[in-house]
Amino acid sequence: MHKRIFADLHKRIFADLHKNIVVKAMGKISIMIPDDLEKEFRDEVARRFGFRKGSMSKALEEAIRLWIEINRKNSNITHNTDRVSGDELVKCFDECKGLYFS
Image: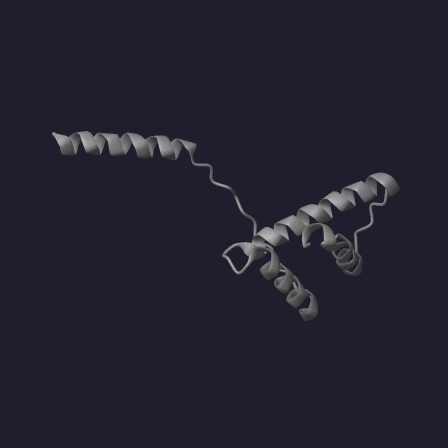
């Protein structure tokens, strides 16, 4: 009797949990950057987030969101539709480093 009640309760709990689970689709991007930039970025990520799993992804997500935000603001001001070069991107990150890595 108790086993059956426990089994029913177990099914109900996991059915409710399953309804509330949201699967987040994740993209994957492979990039090549200069070694010195990679080292500097990894050092900053380790300093800010530690060596925990997902630290690099978290930092890169922040960096990409920041880059998008800055470029949207710049395009609204200058109406410039040209792509931003890698050097401009590095400069942008350097200027914003104090905001996010202090």
